Image (cartoon, rainbow, N blue to C red):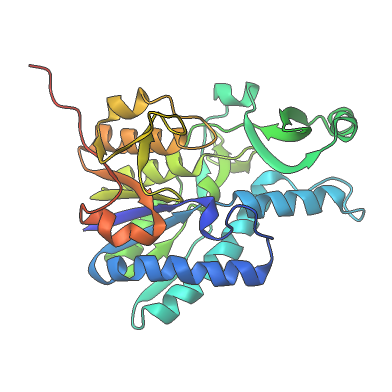
Length: 307
């Protein structure tokens, strides 16, 4: 079976942890332990989040006095793919002797006319005071949104059209490799309609939607979305909260999940199931093996046809 795994950003940095290299190295071993048994039995692609790492790099770049302008987000995203890809590849190499492991920096094609470019919603970087945010908005043209008592920069999050290197990923899988790619949703690029030249854009593509797109194009048998909760909950954080052992795409979309939490994961699972007819699941990292074998998580299955 061919499985695409989408790791949440908290897989390498848990909420409240310092973004130290030693912390991330320790956490990546937990990821490897959770996925090793599946990797022994199935073809696997691992995608991952990069929110905490991108925030650190964006903050450092914005504060670096040696730079005439902060490094663009698409290049910072590429840096995080290299950083996290190296951590995962080395840990997987040690845990899966004899396996071929490769980490790729991949690019995600987006449309230049995507309406998201006019509606920036994705929060990146550190929290600024109101005064600092206003200064940056004036000096750099950045846009901000309220985040608690401060302000955070917001950037566009366009729809992923496809992962540019999908064919290469497929070839590597056929050759027996486990592939780490599409980190942080991939480096967002547009393609010139005449020459095909790729240009990086100031945006962040949703990692879960990119994973779903990649899984569809790779003809994967299963999309496994791993996060820090054991399953999807209906009426989350209310007195009526209850676990959903299974759900249809329509039920997920009707669940009222928030954009900054379960919403993109639910949408990604729904899209994959609708477009391929195959199963997707959402659940906790440590239960990855049990989720694939139907013993944990939320299984997303096709809607039943109307009678």
